Length: 172
Length: 413
Image (cartoon, each protein chain N blue to C red):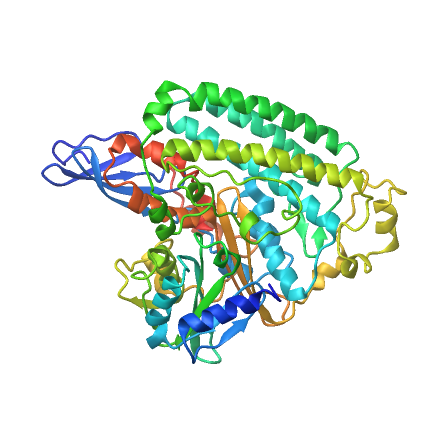
């Protein structure tokens, strides 16, 4: 997607208007927009043929105090657009992350947004059914995919005395 | 359960009365058919009015675990998503990392990957078929499909040394080359399977009992399928000609000859036929790949960047000069253990047995990934439970559920 990608970049620029930078990365094109413009740009992308969301990703940057949310979108019906994946990215404050939901634009984002919500605590404004999907509510409250949540590996040995073990025994 | 007046408890189900004639039915997570998944259904009479897929019972947080492991060790980790489709599931991760490393695997490695991907696809469709048979009470198909799947599992074992978790694609190539007599086994398997697929049609797909349960059930129109963002055979059975192998060909798919079957009906029967047709295409791709591999000399199963760091004994083993635990069995190249991937962001996608699987990989130049995001085909199909099922009778739930070729460990990740 090196030489032929110029065509799609021009097509995106004409569809979205000025002021949006298109960055060519390995395997996809990234558009960086402000959270305020997200819905507008998403609508324009949908009108130009990007009909479904492949994945909604969030990346945590503790040093920058930011969380970046990326919607990877592409097309199934338009054969030309199907060759490309476009990442629509927006950065929000890490302490109070709120992003406008794109379920109204792309229904396919519904379950992906629920997943980002439980992993990172990013709230999607206007999502019809925002609740944890895979995790239990207790675990979701810990925002487990943020960088400050550390995975503690289990010890090779059982840290338990014989008395403790016998006291927790369920059988007689 | 018992207190609710008029509620009947079936094995694996829990029923609660909400108001007169409106019941909430909990199916799973220990239901013999549903696998590790719960579906909360609200039924009015026996018509489903609201369906809420409650998933996550085999969730392992692979995306977080991958951040604490070396680049190499994530391949066996992600493989655990769908061990019956192991090559397809790990391939996009390997491709995404290769894009960051700026390494393009040699031609032979691409054909070897294509070959194993198709073996996996057939095995994975047969698994799905067997489960589908059980859902509809057709135990014969279950026995047949699982028996025939064994052939392809054994082919994978001959090629890689492992039945299911082969970790075959490596950065820059594959783990080992194919054995000398592999072509013979592949041709035997494809000839047998083509004959069997005709028999499957006779006993299952054209069986009047099965047809009456599947035809016109769970219809997803084309526009709706795209709107929900379904993936893989499910979207192609609704008339959308979209396949990653066609849209953005990877590995050797731009050099092999195959068709993308498409069905217009969008019902459960079309989804079943779709898989049969895809298996036929996979068998043809397998033969083409093995023909190419036999015609070309054994050179370059892994990129020169990695191969040049291998000790001399590895090269002698690969040339067949030194027999070591069987021919061509090269050990893992030591460079992988200390691999650091240049900083960057990449995205890769592959058409796996259950649909498109995508990886977003971000590196900050360290020996572990900064962020890996994976979305599997099964996960994208979960949304169809919510929107395609309401309106059908509760008895149609297994027929629709089975036709999506569900696989809980893959969507839970």
